Amino acid sequence: MATIKIGVVEDEMIIAASIVSTLKKLNYTVANTASNYKAAIEMIEKEDLQLLLLDINLGGQKDGIDIATYVRSHYTLPIIFLTAHSDIGTVQRAKTVKPNAYLVKPFTKDDLYTAIEIAFSSYDESSDKQLKKDNIILKTGYDYIKLKFREIIFIESNDNYVSINIGSGKPLVSRATLSEMTDKLPSSTFTRINRSVIINHAFIKKVETDQVHVGNSSFSITLKSRQELLEKMG
Image 1 (cartoon, rainbow, N blue to C red):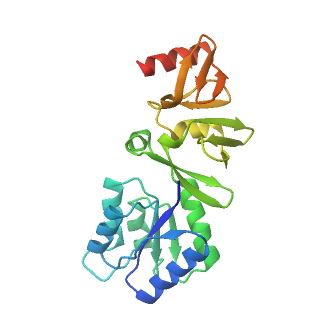
Image 2: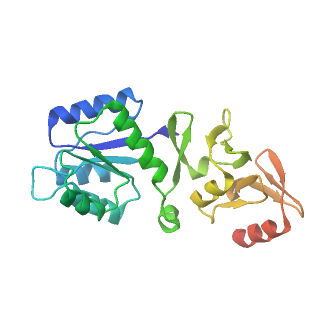
Image 3: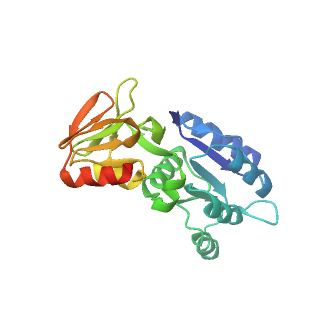
């Protein structure tokens, strides 16, 4: 597991340093900053980022919107645009790449935190893109955690919260419904076996008529879910 890593693309060194300092105070992990298109693409391809803070106006032929266009074509990554210009033309052009938040300079620590929260909460990956990934981002308390699919043994619901069992230490608790979790997990690897439990196929020990044994736990399984599970397992 790892806390989320944020990439910063900003061509003004003082502003970039201030953003990095603020992000660290907010307990985010920060990658090395980039100041132009080429450096930004290298950072994105090298670092395992979970969010990108991207200045629209960069000192070069290609700007932040060009970088965002590249990201949208190659990655599943939330984007927050930073800009000193809030004119209609800039906003309309920025909208073409569908940023997850838009932050106008100068902004405060609270503004930055709010934008990041909005970006993560509004970011909804398509099922096709999700299948290409091997992890999920979970909010636990005030933190975001990146969890590999292969680490998850099973997930149980508890009202508006879910408990994610990873086999080591205490289960992770996240505010979400089981339906929301189902939408974020690849169906080729996970199956919802009843109203309260999602299991990872890799940890199945035995499937019985009305029960499935996963890791060191056993759960009831509906007939419909059992048939679906067996079909997936081949």
